[in-house]
Image (cartoon, rainbow, N blue to C red):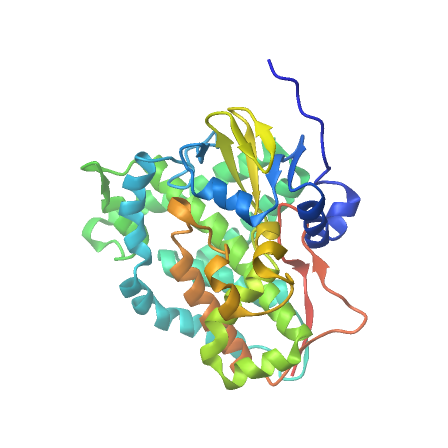
Length: 384
């Protein structure tokens, strides 16, 4: 049995949590492949992360003790599920969904104060993420309140690392989905023609999806979508509040939005990490890592690597786009990237179109989320 490696850092220390971006930047320079009891082997450099993404045979995605479709699977199983699920994010489906997305974004933006302050995360970003997810999956508006409560409980359990509570909250969410599936089955041909109903009729290997598979798919889409989209909207609004000239450029040239959004989210990550497990001994970044070891991909560091992006805070969308890992890379690149890009472009266009200026509130600074969260727990903004 190999000796347990010494810890190179503590991801939960006060110094790291006080400013995660700065801490990860420092780790990338000081100890780019680092061990800790909490995150196991963490990879901070872009090149090392790409080694993992380009070699799914050595770095397996099968890291969860629960069924995780498809992101917790490896080929060939992963391939079959991606072939089934990727069409839900096709260009045709995105065009069809855009009017509904536009309506939600415009309605929320129209409710903003003309001249006043807003707690942006709770009053706009989270509400947009919730409404847009319900619309995409075909869920009833009445679900928004219990889902919002579920998000709160899930966040609190995750921050406390309370595994028992996290499992209970997860089972509560599963119950929502199983109830909805039962209602759709009972409705038969009268069931709404939406994505949730479509999953009930989908097949894998010429067999209908089992309820546990559908629940896993929807859970992965929902948990990721609600938290990450809300974080993205908050990050974008805060960045533009700090960069008024860019804010104005995007008002006058909305065609720049899509690329600029990707670049801002490269600078300030909406998703901090991802996990893998080694299937055989491997050397990465000069460190020997045995088989069966947990690997933590540090997106929030790799996307700021000076060796690839130069000054990490420089906003240069065209120059950085080819290496931006916002939506991952390789066979496990995020299948929902087209949906996320649509939603973020539409909501930021609506936000800018309904305002003259967005600024921070003097004396009332934003409060950052802490790992595993990203973005802002609270974001007071002045809207004019």
